[in-house]
Amino acid sequence: MSKADKFFRRAERLVERLEQLVPAAAGTRVDPDDAVAWRWRTTGGRGRLEPIRRFTSVTLGDLLHVDRQKETLERNTRQFLSGLPSNNALLWGPRGTGKSSLVKALLNDYAPHGLRLVEVDRLDLVDLPDIIDCLDGGDGRYVIYCDDLSFDENDATYRALKTVLDGSVLDTPENVVIYATSNRRHLMPEHQADNQGARVIDGELHHTEAVEEKISLSERFGLWLSFHPLNQQRYLDIAAHWLKAHGAPDDEQARAEALQWALLHGSRSGRTAFQFARDRAGRLALEDTDE
Image (cartoon, rainbow, N blue to C red):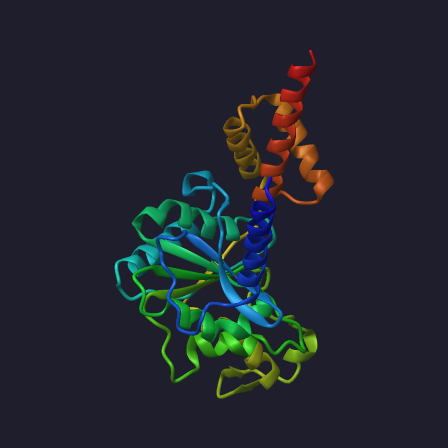
């Protein structure tokens, strides 16, 4: 390699590093043809939209026993894509019950119809106005996706989300909707002491200011979709689905191992079933190659 080639390679690497440090100019529009998903990344206090090139392949057909939640969110998404009135959505429930998988499956199924997604970490919610500015006025239809959303008692970042949802004189553009997942219905911890000051006046329950503050954020989501733990049969159904997807047999031995796996992991959930299927399929394939 010549000295000139080495120089230009080093120059290209330097330019790539500088591009990562410098955000897009304010008001820059995102091209929906560049990618189907982005994440908001901050470096040195500056943010930028970074395309996601590798995305999970889960589809709506892979999600079992969440038919009501799937139907409701899919309908809301179709309304959104058609330019019809639609709602921001909060998906809440125990871990591993399919909340984030449902959002990802919607993207995979509806990306050919124009759906795009922007993933935003909880700590970056203060940048929501800047993110929306990058999406406003474009041709794409964007879901701003906040996964595993929750706030502690001293966390003020929730106010940024609260304002964007429904609290600012600046309206959210019609090509943007917010889908969030959380283990908590009201996104913040609730304590017994919060309810001790509640009073009944003229037959109506009046919460304390602390409770009202915690409820006010989740109430700004038009859709609340609750997810619940699986019973044994539904857990086995999901395990069988993923075993088949990985080319592994679903027999009595597999079902016994699936139940033991759930017991050891302390959870009967879709995530646990998926992890079991990957383990068993990989183990059986490895045994075949060793023979």
